[in-house]
Image (cartoon, rainbow, N blue to C red):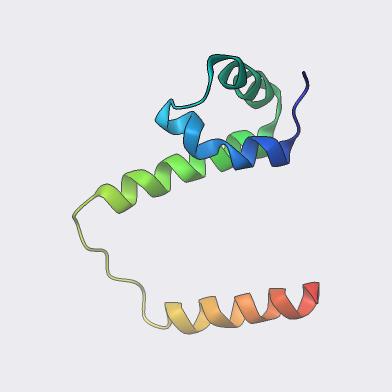
Amino acid sequence: MVIDCKHVWEHISGYLNDTLASAEFVEVQKHLEHCEICSAILDSTRNILILTADERVFELPLGFSERLHARLDEEMQRMG
């Protein structure tokens, strides 16, 4: 069975938590071996989990929230 990126994205959490059925785990692993996009998503998700589990507090740069919201607004307008 060949799986696509959307299938992998839906199972990233199970892959990281090692809760996928063995056959599905193998298919996701095979896909990750050749798909740079899904591998990057996996790495990003893993990094987010590590950062959110960390009890340290990070101060965001001044104006970060405003820039983030402006960028999100731009992307939403471009897509819609």
